[in-house]
Image (cartoon, rainbow, N blue to C red; front, side, top):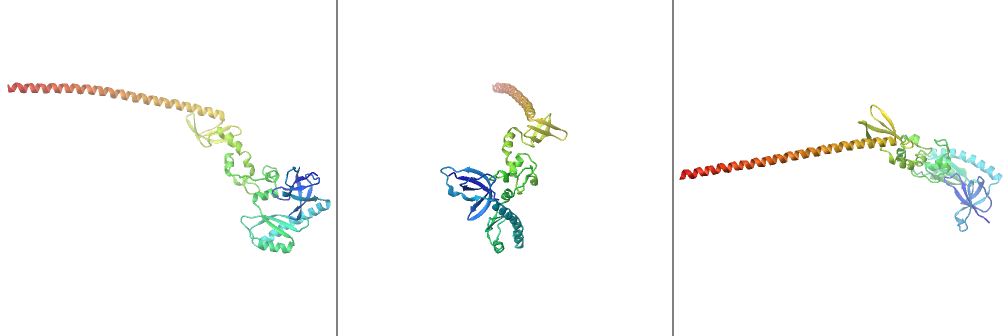
Length: 326
């Protein structure tokens, strides 16, 4: 007998995988034994089990829902929607800082799951006592994060399509504001936030592409020389390979190739000017050195002449002194 591994959605953020021995199709409503309680969920994935697969790790599907089960399930959904408001009212009466957004009941109403969001931990022991006396069922209160709530509730994103988290995302990656800056988006937090209040997940989709494509671009805000004017890079379009430079008088749109040619031309001009200045400096230094050497030569010659004259005067004096003695 072929055993099927079935992925079922129970208003949770992730699929629950179960085993089943009979035929079952995607879209069927299945009744599953979850911790001893019958819950109904929608089939989203079906595959055959492998020969060496451990089937004990999966929950067990009791049956494919009958028409009576489907009718009962619809009635329970209406009751769960009503319970959201009633439980929230009781939480507000106890001054609990929590927001109830989902209630899920088993088909026999013997267990009720209450899901809520809160900024901090909530002491709901008093609430649990009140609800247990009113509902006469086993209660499970579970706190979830805002992104998990958006995944469970669903909705339409700013792109006009169903939320990624409720459509195909199984895990949440870390999203940072640096990704928006890398894509040169306007840092407007409300516009960059999704239904969960966090940064939209799609910021990560193109971040790697932008990082790669920006390798040949200069830094935004840097100053370049153009026609003997200092101009600032004020805008870049990575996908179109264009950028805009501007000063107080004018603005110029360039392609990346044109910009690189401009920079190379200015760089060559600056190098030529630098080389000329270096050559002029070398020439000046050489002339000064030659002039100094000539001065030294002339000075040495004059000093030798002066010494010669001095020796001659001294000899004449000595000769006259000897003549007087005689």
